[in-house]
Image 1: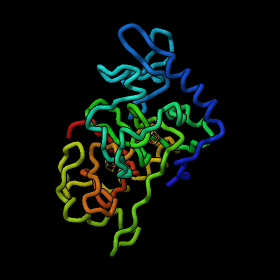
Image 2: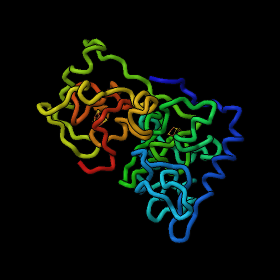
Image 3: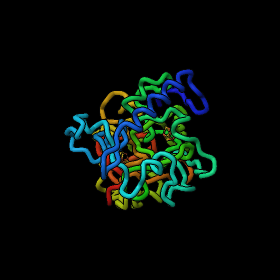
Length: 269
Ligand code: SF4
Ligand code: SF4
């Protein structure tokens, strides 16, 4: 784990941050297509972007296309699609649609600008936040148990909450977790994107460079927005010990981990 849990802290620079975020969020609107400046998708490569420049000459990596049929107001304030309204977050917090905070009130930003905020630490993004609800409808955006509107895994806000590290299960040592057989219920389970696990065709954690998502992003091994929690291959906790498993990788896998096989959970299995 990297960094402190900042949930509930309201940094001194929040007003200045809100002003900057508002200016960024209202900067890009063109006929027929509505863009929000400064957000990038879960791949970290810019939603729908080909890496070129837009009509204004600004790099497309600094812009984000809204989901089809979603207005800028809906994107910022909701409502989010029905499947997210009372969904559980990565940290298993149930979203209450009547008890949410606006993006403006939490210094909401894309990752690349978050490091200008006093409470942001390298590697922290929505994809490894306990409050994040990964994509459930294939549009690559998710939601949040605490904040209104559509949320991308590569975003961040000032009430970011670190995911708790699972305890080592009884009968195992920490060193054994990477290679230990997972409990029976995971052996041939189906991942969150529909991929069936084959216990005889798995890669080792060492081979796929498994590490914590926060660490991988902080060290620029991978772009922001990626964790096992929003990976197509992840098999979420099935026995209440908060560990999960993977359809491609052996051993115990935590929701806040990441590896080189990461694939967006919106991908079909
Ligand atoms: S998921 Fe993102 S928007 Fe929600 S609390 Fe965490 S960092 Fe903030
Ligand atoms: S990021 Fe790697 S270890 Fe994690 S669920 Fe995806 S494929 Fe498995």
